[in-house]
Image (cartoon, rainbow, N blue to C red; front, side, top):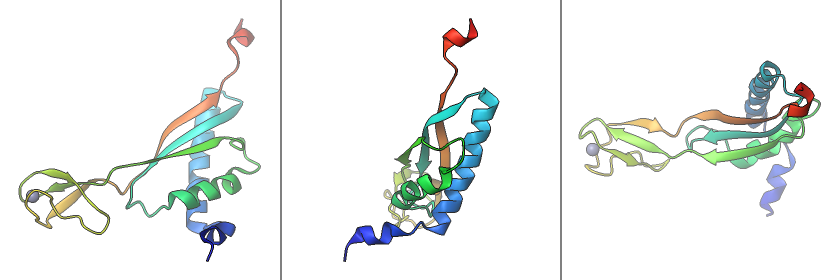
Length: 132
Ligand SMILES: [Zn+2]
């Protein structure tokens, strides 16, 4: 089966994540007095529960008819890092295996990997000539 067929419908979860992002981005745009938004960068951890492909797909639907429409979305993958409560080591985890790499203890806490954060907004600001 064609994997692309799964993308024909916008996923409701990713759409609501996108709408929240659009609100935050538009708030930033208004505060800075920008006319438009060119580029938005988000960082998503493997355990954030957000599928990057679905998020990218939902972006166009979420920005439609908003001041953020036309902005490109860049998705960065946040690393999955765990800190061990037994030996104190930090190591890279896998979504299905969060054990410490150093001592194999399963008493680990997530340092990074379950977040979905807005890391950058590139605004279209008025040209400097307009300010003269
Ligand atoms: Zn350990």
